[in-house]
Image (tube, rainbow over all chains, first blue to last red; front, side):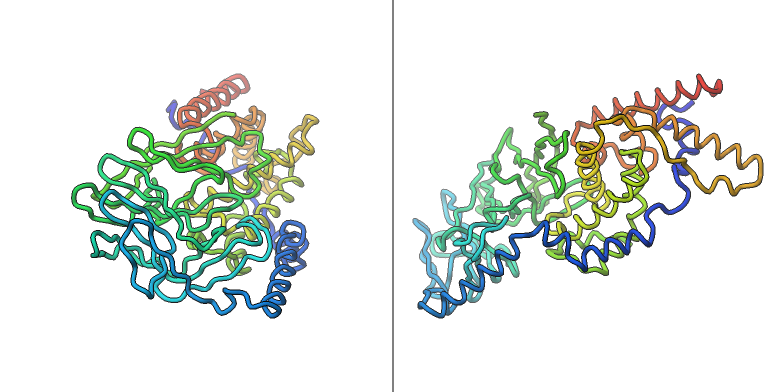
Length: 272
Length: 179
């Protein structure tokens, strides 16, 4: 007998049930449930609160001249870095020993206040939406890295967000988390500024079956470097909080500048 | 058709939901059944999984396949139900392979009986062995994906899988002198 795949495997692969257990009736019930909104109202009460909050916020705008009511462009300069032109808004930045990696609004940002607390932040947090150019500036000159289109930042203040700088042997890696809060996972972008050449690139997150420009880490944790590898704490999807085997896992990525990628090399479990 | 593009969605439309249910509905129901061993509960869990997926699609980052993500939700949902309702011991009450009765040929019937027997043995295994076995055998998932889904090390998966196969193998030997 083949220990790897016993011969009874083939028979068992026919399945336990030969009919289709997930019936059209069940599909219909899901649709009806969503249409009636019974789950939505139960699971997303913050939406109602949010709508009310937005309404109150609009009324407030009419009553007082709120400084962001006309969607003005905020000007912020990077401390220690080169001065931006008068039309630029630096939404995020990170400083190397030689220069500054900047995330700059391409056009005017759409700036609004959240208006209600939710997974994404407090009611007073600000949302900045637009296209953003990432560039690396050294001694008055700058080189464009990438344009991130239709990106939304949510932050407590309008000050430029400081990217997380992580020291690797070959480069400084910067982690950009446009939204500082989330119930499930903080979405991140990664950039590297190579030592010596000063070349700045966007990094892709490469895993066994995927390559993506973003990854994530668990809210309440921070990306770190261990043994010259990026360590990101994992999190659970919806419904995971009640699992008895709910364990925090972490993923480790190796920086590969030839591929401009963070390549996942290890996934660890942490039994609580 | 692969639905991996949903990783870029912040909200799901009903057409995508339908496609998702058509493509993965049976897999999700079966997995819920493998975990709970209750037909009616598997019905409820499978529906709940798609409702959760509909509202939680913004949390799917494409780090795993869509199927693995849905199976993860299934697993967590099943455990929630288990915490609520499974304090009592459950037994295998549902009769598998319902349409087996319609078969007339004796050989075919005996074959289906044998397959049923294998599944009865699989379903009698402790949950941690049963789960890795069905993920490997029925879903044909790679070890790494099973490890990711169960949130355990790949070595643990291999060990459980080996022991699960051995247990079934021993039961087959005991029952019918199967070699």
